[in-house]
Amino acid sequence: MSRTWRIGEVAERTGLTRRTLRHYDELGLLVPSGRSWGDYRLYDETDLLRLLQIQSLKALGLSLPEVAGVLADPAMNAAATLRSHLAHLEDRIEAEGRLAERLRTLAGADERSWEDILDAISLTQALAHPDPIVRLRAALQSPVSTTAELLPALAAEMDPAVQEVLVWALARQPDAGAAAIGLLDSPDARVRGLMVRLLGKVRDPGTAPAVVAVLGDPDPHVVNAAVNALGRLGDPDTVSALADLLGSPPVKQLDLIDALSAFGAQAVPAVAERLATGDAETRVQAAEALGRLGSADAIPALAAALADDDRSVRLAALLALGELGPDASAAMEEALDDPTIAGVARRLLDLHVT
Image (cartoon, rainbow, N blue to C red; front, side, top):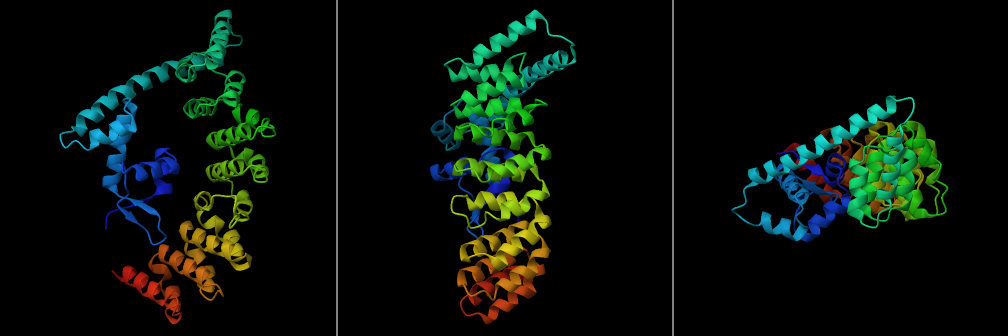
């Protein structure tokens, strides 16, 4: 059987969002080749090659309808498309290399020259320009970029594409994490969300306590941004706080499970506790999370859940055991005595045998 990847795995490894991948699916531009028992999108190697072509064509300036038209053309030369994208990418790498060298020079200087100060003023003006393309180019290409200049620009930026570039530029600044924490109490939920996204990109585990505090934010978008950031930060001390959100309606449960899955076996005890003590919806989500953790340590908790009073919990636990592979076969056999889920259990056991 060829290797497949779930939507969360493709998003994590490519830098694309799950929303983008779902949008591609809805457009018929990139329809995943399969679905898992838990109804997750499954991408195979052919899908990933098509995704590479899509991103290459987008980088050349094509709109999504134009990309779809090109890919639908049987005469399309994929190799030529990729060579063109490679040339474009090499130009960008060269420009970013010049920027990195300039930043190294500035960082090593005891004082900035008047020329540097003028450059900083120029950057500030460019980042405030009404044309988002000008702002984007300024963030990417300016010879001077500091947290003091870029952070206010990010807080004021409304264009998503420019926001992403500013976050990227700020994440490379050594003091960006501390500066972002200082804006987590902004009265503007949009700004709080941007700062949390930035902290996720900086990936400094020392900022995790500040991000955990954001899990109590009144704005669900900010809370979901914090969930994603904690998954990136990887501080095991945050697992319990994340597990507490299982079954919580304002939180995107798929994103939460993705964040917990980044911790693997470390997350099993906290999630298993929610499986044993939470309400029905929490128990369902906890069972699904245990399946995603990919650890045999989760098998005892999931096996116990096969005796749950709620059929939806029993089914979720069974499907999670199915995700854990042959090691969970003995536990799945217990479900053969439950007429409400026995058919699913037989199917899963057959898959493990084959």
